[in-house]
Image (cartoon, rainbow, N blue to C red):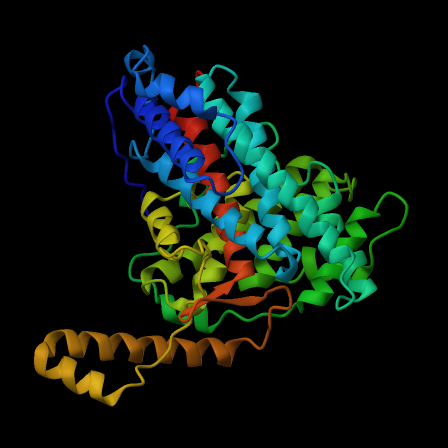
Length: 423
């Protein structure tokens, strides 16, 4: 699948970003809610007075695939998701902190690699870094003190958010060539439904956590043969596959498996993300069915973090943003298909618009069929999720929101790296 490139004038894109980011900060301050952006009221007023900022000339790379408003949209999205976590701090699971820690690490990498960004943009990024870092610590503390979580689970999972420098990949800021994933491109006319039907989970999440925990202690204790087979020998799919990728990222960070060369590990990651690429394209081709939404975002986040920019499709970004609630909560909603439950509503719709009626019924039929397919091919239940009711209608998924934050963090980093490489 090819990226959709949107070329913009070289003098306009960052100007728009600065204006919109500052407007967002100004609105946050005047509303009186939440944490205050370090952009500050004075900064917003200076910009609104058009004190020279609107006349900046910035060089935009011709390789920039994003639209001029995308950075502002992504910033708004992650801030709303952070607010959701902040408002539900005692009801979260640890994966929430994985999302916030990833955002913190990725935006810190942006600031370190792009010191010439305008001060207003830098201040906004610093604000998001500080907020996500603070939330990460608060969530980890709440999990650590929770009597409802076993000591074994805490031992296995807390290092994911308490270990420094786990989530800043690609560390050197070098993205892999897009041609690498193109070699794994699905063939013309491939059967997406069949690919997903043949994909099965084989690693339970608790087992995955236990194996990944061994990586944190690999310098003093050898990893088990069972774990090495699960993550380095056996071919996995779906969440088991993305956790294989996470395993390799942590292993490289902790300098495990020294017998395996850096180049050998990179080739193995390429093979894993090549299969993830195939599965993600299958999910895209069948229209992003709700039961695959959480997995799809995790695929974008993890293989994007591994360095493969093919996962940063702009149309995929727009789909990810659609899964976030437009309501006040800011969470990513549990979007699993629910059949229409009102006969009167169906009759009324049929008489009003028969075409729309048939489209809706066909959509629900397809979603129901895919849901049965997914239930058939995998029995894996996600341990690390919590569903929080927001208002009368919204059912928010903590894990979905966390991987949404991570995927958007990766997009924000790639945006700056590719649109403003000289800053």
